[in-house]
Image: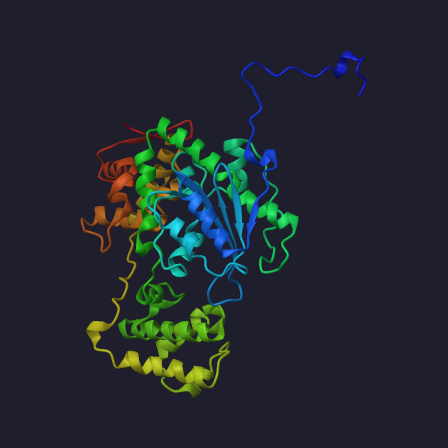
Length: 413
């Protein structure tokens, strides 16, 4: 650089515009933990903090249960990568996640928290999911971690290891940096979201939404609920659903035995087809195109059908009611969806987080038909009712007027 040329004089920074310094910019190296005693000591240290960031890297494409390849923990002072292939006992980590006195900060963390529940045998407590919280103070949901760090703390991430195999060792420097980036910024993002939520007076809303992460129904799914969600299950009667429930149990057992993802053992549509025909002979089941199991597995499936057929009718799952939505209800549902979206845009809340189309449809039908829904509606309780449910109630019942002005939907106060 030509020191004498005035064109090259360093520019002065405007007053009050100091460059923000974050931990990653200080090249804070992650600590890789490969010793059980070391893990216990570090977790004890983290437990003295008010909060910590948590993430995992896991592989589930070719396994019955997710295989944890790495666990990441971070506070303002430390970043830790736990190698589960060296440290088999991960109990200290699960104890941290389940400690109600420490806040667990995650980003889109439902699957990571599920590992604590399913593999650690503990219920997560005091969770703060930055992605969910972001949807309650902005219209951006779901927001990736890369965009979140850029929007909230002006840091640009380079996510280059999204398809990496976390089972391979040794970890590369790129993998280590990528894994550390998943947690190192979360404490700063968490504080930024907190400040904004306080300005908007939404901290109580966020606390209510986060409480779901500490309830078992968030992680548990009954076989009956899973059967209803099978593609094509809507055409099954009560006995067919009972058979589907038994077949799901059989499939789970086979997947565990083979250590394969459940849907790779027997596809959903094949389970529905077996349930529809009530086949009890392995030879009939084997004829299905795409059936990739044989021998004992076919006999297990047939036995499952027999068990379900022997159940009394009162033990059959309830059949979902026929969707008899009228044209008028469909039009009103579309209108209520537009009203909700306009209200959310005006108030900086993600409409996707408030209510899905199916929820709005049930809400409309319950009002038009003056019937109580079979299951409680989210729009009728808690922060969703306070924020949007009452407004939609007033609109659908004609108590509040809406109008269009320059292409915008306006809702009377």
